[in-house]
Image (cartoon, rainbow, N blue to C red; front, side, top):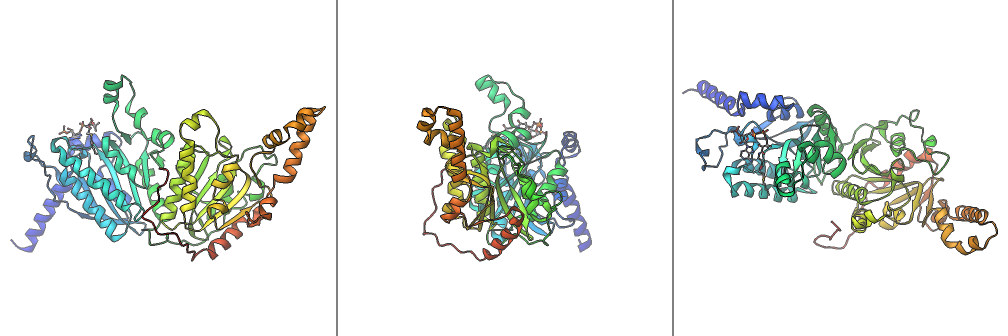
Amino acid sequence: MGLRSKTLELRKRMREAASGGGKKAIEKQKAGGKHTARERILSLLDKNSFQEYDLFVKHAGRDFNMDKKYLPGDGVITGTGTILGHPVAIYAQDFTVAGGSLGWAHAKKITKIMDHAIKMKIPLIGINDSGGARIQEGVNALAGYGEIFYRNTLASGIIPQISVILGPCAGGAVYSPALTDFVFVVDKVSKMFITGPEVIKTVLGEEISMEDLGGAKVHAETTGNAHFYAESEEACFEQIKQLVTYIPWNNEKKASPYPAKLPNTRKYKIEKILPANEKLPYDVRDIIKGIFDASEFFEVMELFAPNIVIGFARLSGKTIGIVANQPAVLAGVLDVDSSDKAARFIRYCDAFNIPLVTFVDLPGYLPGIDQEHAGVIRHGAKILYAYSEATVPKLTVILRKAYGGGYIAMSSIHLRADFVFAWPTAEIAVMGAEGAANIIFRKEIKEAEDQEAMRQAKIKEYKDNFANPYVAAAYGHVDAVIEPKDTRKVLIHSLGISDNKEVDIPKRKHGVPPF
Ligand code: HXC
């Protein structure tokens, strides 16, 4: 056979192997509003950039008549490519082939591409659409998952890991996404749970639909397992592309710089956002948009614990991780979920050389029996740990309230923020003036002829003395009190001089954070 006929044979083999589970299975996949694994990879990656590997790998299972089956690519497509010019390693499980179930060869294909990603130091994207461990392959399927989990952990903090849930992801399989940095879900397509509705019904007698148990909304809003929620696969891919532009390829690089752009200060007038009455809420995202490049803010975990806002933006073209209390929700308090949300994001930014800017306006940690019993001590400690541990440039702007433990936790100078700025509207105190006056002037108020007049006088006295940034500034706990309109300029300056920041930390294997 000459080259031409051998080339034709190769093409025929490739066509066969790339055809997935056949027409009927593909039709079923499409009827569910889902794309095929190959279509997903091709629409996510830059045109003509995908290089596939291990297309001809054969499945390993021989029992239960598996030796007589043909499973193209063993139900997973692996390769490398680029997204907007950024290199990535990628795998996509193919539900049309044995339900995308994970056997030994399927797992080996995934771990091989993971090893490449770790070695080449490029981001890894995993598209999950699978019935889980291939039942016919028994322990070898479990072994495959174990090998993936180990590599997820090994890669953590070295390369960005992105999981996209585009179908079922059940049983132990959910733990690979859970170990990665960002999880994307799509409405009505994504399903994640440890035990499905059938098992729950049998064991506990509880009835619930798959969607209500582990659908996209549930994970984006309630469990906090998902970081990005989209209405369609196309919208999800656009989110992934955007994320890739904000993050560096690995922990030794910085995120790619972009041309600096001014914010739209006509739309987001920074001096006009705080309400005149300090008790009224506002949307802290308007402040972010009034400061950062092009008024763009790429929010992470938008629907979960909305009392804290986290996400990426650019300042003078450089990626910044933003953490901000959200006064519009629960007055921006810290609680179990918002502490978890912020702490993990801070650690991500720190691992990947992304400077942090923190905006502070909160009355403190949320009081209550529910919170205490849900472990607000342990979870709240995570944010203290994450900020203290972070060595990337840390800039803090106190907008309004910075009370009690909240003042310390939100990237205070005591947790080694590099620069803390306060607006003239900042109130830095142990607690609000009403509560403080009621406690420290209890006797005077009780003995006064007009108790209410005395209470108001004492509240005013406390406010005049403490509800401002100048006491903290007098002790150097605040580096500068700045006018709101100067915030962007001051942050750009501080970022510029923090570019070569170095911190000596005592040698240790690793810390023991309050996981
Ligand atoms: C082998 C599987 C499979 C599996 C699906 N298939 N899951 N084959 N092992 N785990 C096959 C089906 O037999 C079928 O093959 C094809 O994939 C499509 O599946 P359907 O059931 O027809 O699809 P659908 O109706 O859409 O239902 C999808 C599903 C269901 C909900 C995911 O297939 C299902 O419940 N599968 C089993 C889920 C499960 O219990 N997995 C094990 C989890 S334990 P044919 O040949 O008929 O087309 C686990 C442990 C991991 O994963 C532990 C790690 C530590």
